[in-house]
Length: 99
Image 1 (cartoon, rainbow, N blue to C red):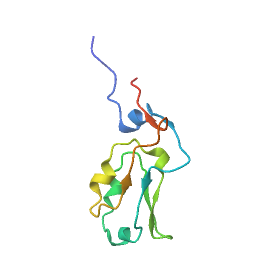
Image 2 (cartoon, rainbow, N blue to C red; image 1 turned 180 degrees about the vertical axis):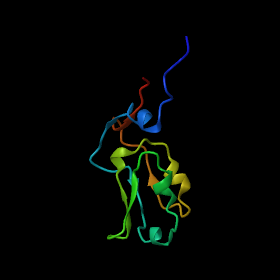
Image 3 (cartoon, rainbow, N blue to C red; image 1 turned 180 degrees about the horizontal axis):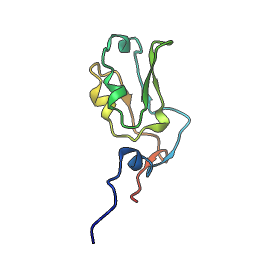
């Protein structure tokens, strides 16, 4: 019998995660002005969970830390090393489960 299940999309996989959100962010951008000089803003395109967005009116990166899947991609991609990331405090953050 052939396996007829379609491969899971990234959105399907992200839907398997559960979060216990903290009231304080575990992600910081120490110098918002540095992001003004960053042309490609790879943190935005490289984050699979859409944590980082550019606010054109405020001229800064907005951080939706509560969406973070703790993969570290954006921190590794930032050409200016301008993303500080610490693990969420104990009991908070993402929980992985397999469906």
